[in-house]
Image (cartoon, rainbow, N blue to C red):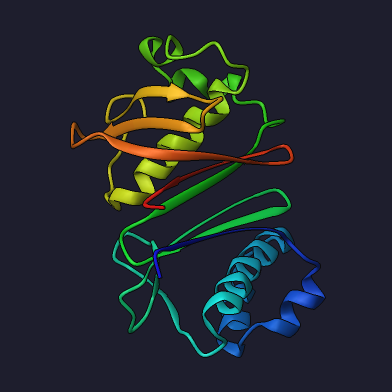
Length: 189
């Protein structure tokens, strides 16, 4: 199989509801805001469209989504009106962000001075956020400080190449994609 990356617009709640299982709908009811329910249902619809309506989706001990009874790995993200999913034969992760989001007001909590020197590209902060989220999701560990524990080591935004590590582990190479005003970073693709 390799890897599949799905990047889709979140549909209206009525359409999503008609495409979901009763189990998904019950789980979505526990989410407060309507947009959170739509995001939750949208990525599940995307996974089932790719793998079949009968698959069961659960969560691991760290809260990461899994396909129950399968050797496939799953990564999920959403941002405003978009959902991003990666399905792979091997561990994987994904994050999506809207580049119009204001990252500057929280940048000092996740980007070091050294990381700011990696590129002068205007999307540095959005890419850094996506890349660090992707590394965090990939490693599925708790107690992570994005400033101290997650490091970006190289970034070539124009070529779609971002590298980093978490907890000093082996450097990981991530892929950077764009769709309209969104940035998507994947690991394990």
